[in-house]
Length: 78
Length: 293
Image (cartoon, rainbow over all chains, first blue to last red; front, side, top):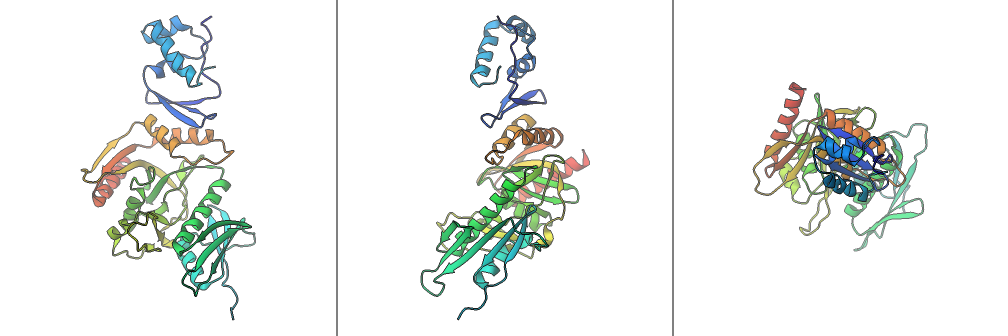
């Protein structure tokens, strides 16, 4: 099931002029997410599935899956 | 026959009381010069840390300087330059470990009545040289290498460690005047150690200063002077990267505070090769910020 895609609750994040900076205290690492990942990040609140995310970002579901896989690989998703 | 050892020196390193005891007057004078801006009477308390400096074989061709913290040797050196560098490192490490309500960044800082300029960057970017020139031109000295940013107020606290200057850079500051005091002289051109320059105590402001602009200097030989605004997200990542890590210390408050800082304070990248052009660019940035808040 694709619903419930959610940011890790361990990670801190801040939005600065449209960009997102995440800080992962487990690895003591800060990362900058620029568009479109920043837009995706803001929607990862557990209420959107992949089709909804793709519609919100006006991109293909396959692209969203790729971005999610990258975030997941960095340990930034629940 | 040896007389009594000279009296100990007492410092306040960001509020942490440190005692440095030397067994010879000449070493005490050296230490007093380097840490002059941090001198503070002990008052009624006890020093948290006591550092003992001993010189062995002072009359021989091969004297050695040893500094100990309790039973741990922090340096055993063949010249006083290494001794002073190690003492400075030890004092800084202690202050950082004991100060939980500040984010420590690899940065220098100088201030005037308008507020503070934070010069952030890794080793060799030119921040010490730039802060030294600002100080020589009348700015107050807040910090070099280790800038403590209060996570509540976002102000930079005075932490007047000696400046660490690249060998050769000192020539740019002759005549020194009375605001900065060169403490160590390196005679070997291949010596990679920095030269220590002490701030005169009277140029250190007594209170923290609000940060008005953050500048990332970058010394590039031959480059034309260029200053440009930087994006806050990019700067936040850099500041976290330049932050000091203390084992067991949670950096989440630092992240929140630095995010707030870059949200409210303009940030600039400054490429330069000529020091005085860089000083003009940095002070113009500060002036533009203050006149257009």
